[in-house]
Length: 365
Image 1: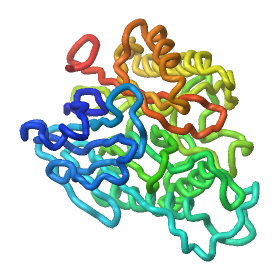
Image 2: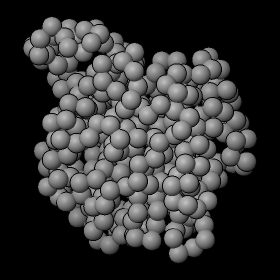
Image 3: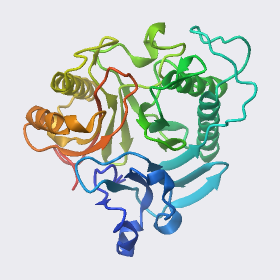
């Protein structure tokens, strides 16, 4: 299995040149990510109509737009089911879903701080999140890829408040409702994931799933997100700090969105350099825990490919300088403007890397 992805191996292309690529690159393509300030409004379809996740995030380190292409092995098969567009090979399935929030939800009621509300109403975002995840789990069970390896969530106005509750917390409630409805665990064996705030657009989710369960990794410096106290919302976020998938001869590490959080508390509010340093300390701790679990010193900071979400574009150079210092050289990274799930967090970093078992160490480039 060669999962060419994020941008582990797949091409990073401008939106303008993306449709003009030679046909051979798309042979094993499972899907794409399109990041652009107006991505949600773009009408151009990806070549071969493979799943394309369009997210309204501005690129900060280039021309303002970028595509990332994920590849599998063999000849992929694509399909649609409900609101989902998916593509799979023999080992993995990649899918995308985008749902707009219903504005005519007349039964939506005020949600109290306990999450019980004054009745049975659910907010439009909570309904959208639950519907999206119910469709995802139904597809994975039906297609025989029951194990989510990695999930990406993008939510408009993630720090905004409506119906008496922050929107990110509404999303967490809807997500967990779907987990419980499909009898999936909400503690322990949960997928790696992130949730970021986009400028506008529908709730947009991409996911990668496999036939074999990945190894879930937690960070000893942090409280597991699914065990957060109620001060962070009526329902805890449902994700692990990382997951390690075995696909053929490759071990693929997916590190969830990581920020300046130790225990369950935000550290260094207002100090973007210190937050970057603390975030990288957390990623280093995840790598150490991963290497301990596999009894091998296989993953290191320079091996990773980073996606860096920056709240304030003016902070870009300070973040990039500190990241370069932590990695010990120029990191393989893209930088995107996005809101982070806590209003006092100035950045979030996710990462991925591949360790090929047939070699001593490193990526297959």
